[in-house]
Image 1 (cartoon, rainbow, N blue to C red):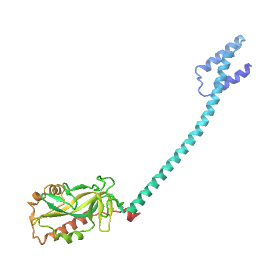
Image 2 (cartoon, rainbow, N blue to C red):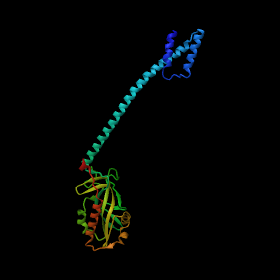
Image 3 (spheres, one colour):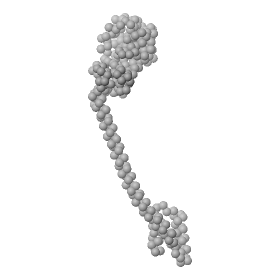
Image 4 (cartoon, rainbow, N blue to C red):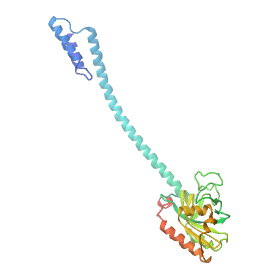
Amino acid sequence: MFDVQRSVVREVAVGEGVNEDTIGPLRMELRALADRYGVDAAPSRLAGLDRAILARRRRARRLRAEIDDLTADLRAVEAEVVGFERAVEAVLADEIDRIRLEQREGWSPVPVLGFRYWLIAGDGMRGFRSRWPTPTLTAVCATTGNADDVPHSDGRCGRLGCGVYAAKGLEPLTAELDEMPLGGYAVGLVGLSGKVVEHQRGYRGARATVVAVAATSGGRLALTSDAAAIDALFTAPQASLHAAAVRDRREIPAHIARYLATEYEERRSTWTSVSRSA
C-alpha cells in the first residue's frame, strides 16, 4: 500500500502545476519523520487528495489535446469562411458589372466631361428643365421625386430619362448657337460625377459641375474656367457680363467653340465605361 501511494505521489509530484517550493519539501519532511519513527507516512486523506490531483491532471491533458484539435478545426473553419466571403464578393461584383453592362452605366475615377448650354433668363442660368442657381446641379427624378439611383436606366422615367444631360461633343451645340436668342446664353464644359449613363451622343449624370463656361449677352462675351468667376456668372450672369469685352456678334460662336474645345483637350482624361471594359 505504501509503495503504491509513493508511485502516485511521484506521478503527482512531476505533474504540471505542482508547487515544488511548498509541497515538495513538505512531502520530504513527512517521509523523513516516518522513517525516523517508523510510522505511517500516507494518511488516507492525503492519499485521496493525491488520487484526485492525478485524475484531474490526466483529464487536463485530455482536455488540452481536445482543445488543440478544436483550435485546429476552428482555424480551418475560419479560413473556409474567408474563402466563401471572397467568393461572395466576386459574385456580387460580377452581378453589379452585368447589370451595369446591360444598363450601359459608366463609372470613372475622374468626372466625365461633356458639353451643354443654358439660356440667360432674367438674372439666372436656365437649363432645359430647371434653373441652375449654382455651377453644380444634382439631378432629381421628376417621376420619383428623389435623387436615389439617379439617373434611372430602367425606363421608369420614359424615353428621355432623368439626370443631368451633357453632349459628348461641341458640334450638336455649336450648330444651334446662331439660333440663340439675343437675351443671352452660355455654353459650358461640365464634369459629370456619380452614376453616369452613356448614350450614343451624350451622357446622363447624377451630378454636374461647370468647369469652364462661355457666356454672352448683348454682344459681350465672358470666357472663364476660374471657379469664383463661374460661380459669379451663375449667381448673377448679367452683372458679371457687364464688365466683359464686347465682341463682333458674328464671331462669338467661333470664339466659344475654340475656347471650349481647348479647355476640353486640356482637361480630358481617359475614362473607361463598364460597357467598354467588361
